[in-house]
Image 1 (cartoon, rainbow, N blue to C red):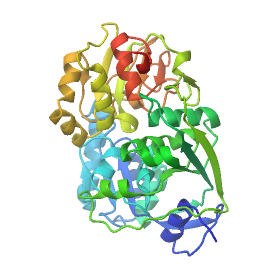
Image 2: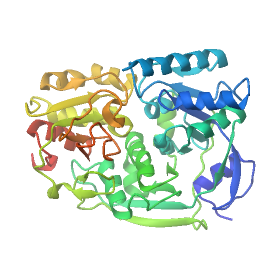
Image 3: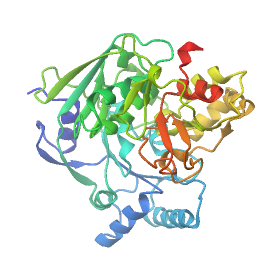
Length: 418
């Protein structure tokens, strides 16, 4: 019987030879991640269970990324609480305030490999499917059960394979592709399905670009995002991990597989307009919209490639004095690489603010919030009402290229026209 990649991974993790979509399985978890925002509730729930020790301190990853450095007494208290838990439980994979966003740090540090089941108490954990893992977000109380047992039940999802074909125009990127898909199928168009990305365009993308696709699978309701591992995956993993892994791929004709053709020929840069991610319009329909802030960063587009694209556009220009721009590298590794390449100097010279690796304004709980009546253009993944601060503000989502050129002109601008 043919199976999808998601089915094969869940079958392997649950000790079964074959499974089908809709079946309930109890899977062994390979990696469990929590961070400073959701971690305290996970720990409190774990302690209520009454289990003294976590199932495997080497398979748990704890990071601080949402409110770092601590921006309030409450955040500082949460950090103290979690540091104590890490020490008591002898958790070996702990990344304090200095490392960056969880979804960037996990693959960088070699915690993500193909064929594994990864859970995180953050909805964008689906990012890691870019390396061929079944990776998904879970609630804090579910995470407590994982801490205690190392297992979690799943309903095996059906799979939508987005076969992306065509040729991307200059300054059209993975972010535009996935926004276009979300705009077509809606925020609930792939509810509880594995969103698999394939086709010649996906194959041509770097691992970083594939992370963008998988990161936003949750924004169309997906359970996980997936890209079949290939030579690019293997090269990315070199010198990052010594974990053994198995490459699993979808069988043609798998029963639960649905294929959606995606033609990106003549695709414009895409903009998600307030206040829903699926409210997507081509840039030609929103060009000229005034903005107050540009945010370049997040687990979606805060990687080195994004900073390189933006720096190339901004070089020798000044940020409009009508707006402010925040540049937040996704990790310390990205930060240091950008520093070595001179990218950070370009941003600083242009008038942008370069901040420490963290989630920044993405969640509306830390630096760079927008006030009433203000408009943010952001490379992050959500633009819900109040997401980045005031409920009287507005958030538009775009690629790094659109963000960079718009920062220069102080309004949403098409990078292809300049």
